[in-house]
Length: 352
Image 1 (cartoon, rainbow, N blue to C red):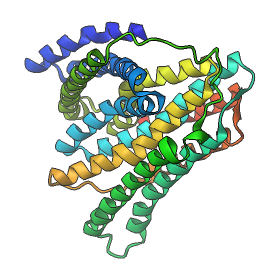
Image 2 (image 1 turned 180 degrees about the vertical axis):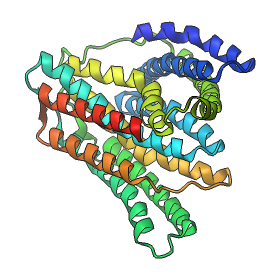
Image 3 (image 1 turned 90 degrees about the vertical axis):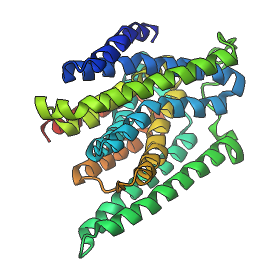
Image 4 (image 1 turned 90 degrees about the horizontal axis):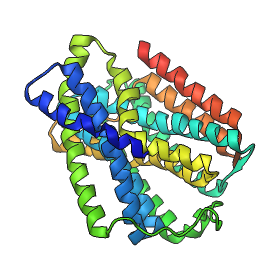
């Protein structure tokens, strides 16, 4: 992942070309490229902080900061009124984590190890929370299509209630995994070979400063990206849904994706699974509700009504992921099927 940092060369060019109002597609592409190494640095900084805070808090911080690009891109998109892009990004992040990240991880790990095992009790806990998020996404659509008047006002109010409930479920999950049942989440990877002590390379102050500065740059680049997005869609006729579903989630999560694959290659499937399912759960139960509440703060509420195809894609992705991971072991063929399922969705979304 260290080679990703060479992409930082795009950062000053994206800022300069944005200031002189250069070609929108060029600026949009450069800002996408710039966010990739910034996300990688955020991952490195949170990993260093984890040496001082411990694995549990460090893991939570890593997952949270890993979703900062999507959160900031979403907030700027909400300010710009691009609600379809926001919803597509949320769906794309969940699909990417459940199918692309986990599928690629299982495939790579499975090629090296015929069968890989993991803690299925911990995995089931994550999938239960993810299942609740599926319910929360289905209910508003069911209400909309069965309501006689299809009232948006009631749908907005319902969405606000759902967002609050999702945040409460997310907080409850943290309490469950970090305090009351933390022994359940003991990894199969906790062997001497995998758990070698490693001294931190940065001081806590240095890691905190780098984390803060890079997060500011991510925010700035996110604003540039969203600012050019409307013109790119309008002038170049790029599919808006495809950008939200595929491009933005991959850009924001590329470092996190690489980390999951590396963990699977090292036969640390518990960590790979935590990155994939844990990130999808956080997108669904934390980032989504925060974005919805932000829209209310901006005075133009966004509802939690997703297009039927989005819902179908999410339910199918959840179903195949649950089926693959229910028995506590994986093989390369399962990973290949998950990866091909993601490609199938990507091709379909390109033509939507």
